[in-house]
Amino acid sequence: MALAATFERPVDLRLRGIGLVLLTMMLFAGLDSTAKILGGSLPAMEVAWFRYAINVVCVIVVLRAWRQPELFGTRRPLLQVLRGLLLMGSTVFNFAALHYLQLVETASIQFAGPLIVTALAGPLLGEKIGWRRWAAVVVGLFGVLVVIRPGLGGMHWAALLSLASTLCYSLYLIMTRQLGRTESAEGMLLLSAVVGMVALTPMMPPIWQMPSSLSVWIMLVALGVFGGVGHFMLIHAHKYAPASTLAPFGYTQILWMTTLGYLVFDDFPDLWTALGGAIIVGSGLYTLHRERLRRRG
Picture 1: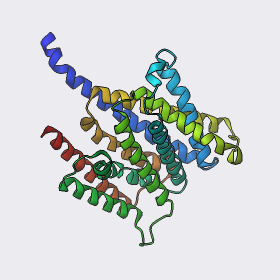
Picture 2: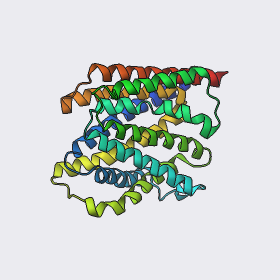
Picture 3: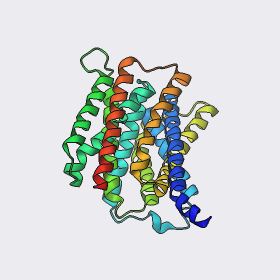
Picture 4: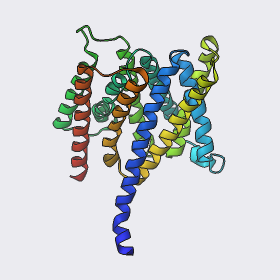
């Protein structure tokens, strides 16, 4: 029996990691849906500020930061600040785009993030990118053009906000790879939220609008909880299973975005959005497949 448990344990751990990623994608879809609702009554930067302020509280309480303060120190403060600013930029651009675009449109564009990371990994991280992965990047970016349809009368200007969000998030992931070699995951989680909150605080007085009802306050709290708990679970998922195993399940977020878009906002993706999203997801999955083969080789 002990021998059987020994063989089953790695599989059980991977399943636990996959389960956490699936839950995380549901929370992230809930985060974007809530932000889209709040964008109808509050400025995007104020919504983002609440997201980070409540996130800071959640991280401190859930991780009990007062018990192990050394986990939240940093050896590279300037890079931590830059990383936090990139995540903040991604959040603000995304929340602004959600005011105008469907959930599934922003999700489709954002899923080009791993492809952009692949393209930037060469010059910024010194990683060798083969021609097959470059081809996948080109195809994936073509998928983005299918979604936003520039010059064909279908492009909304807010798609540029979503593209800016995706670029910021891709650079954030690059910085996360660099800092992950010397910094703790707990520290990166808390510091990114603190940087976002601190950077946005001076901008609040001129744009501040008092939340108008209890339901708005509840949604603002939920926004921070979705983000904080989601990132916390994502960190733990990567403790149970390798990134190459977990990454494909991140694409389940587009299913939640499509479902919530239909149920909450009565939106349903048109043919071009669905086609472009499928191209982007397919390219991303192929890139992950090539990455697995590269690491095995």
